[in-house]
Amino acid sequence: MKLQEAVKKETLFISCGCVIATVICLLLFFILNRFFPEQIPFGLKVIISGVIGCAVAVLNFFWMAVTVQKVTSIEDEGRARSVMALSYRNRMLLQLLWVVLSFALPVFNGAMGIIPLFVPSILIKCRGIFQKRKEGMETK
Image (cartoon, rainbow, N blue to C red):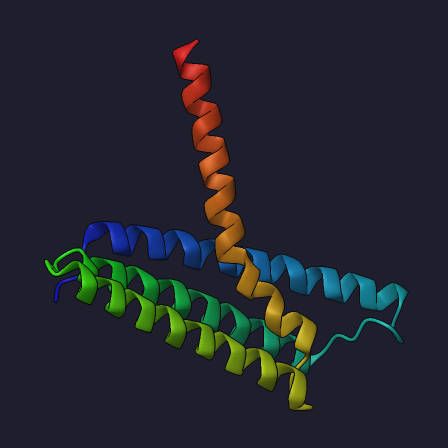
């Protein structure tokens, strides 16, 4: 299966957004650590957790995009629904596994591990808001 341009474009958008958001979060952890070193940790644990969390978020989005591309070519609606549902379940299990590991294993920072998981959803919603706003301004 050849990846569609839309899948590549959207995955690049999400990847860049996740990396930028993760770097901003790491900078916030660093700055807050300077003021509150006992409450806000910063170090290799935080950095590794952010990087892995970002990778899990991007992988989850890419997996979803590839599944949607695959489902659009399935003619049987019932089969298409089951493929999408299976993908959703497996993607949620992947994220749940990462959340559990990031909190359970002492080599990770749980907070920084899960923050990047919210970024793709936020990016998609913000882009939708700004596109609607832009379209509304163009029609005036």
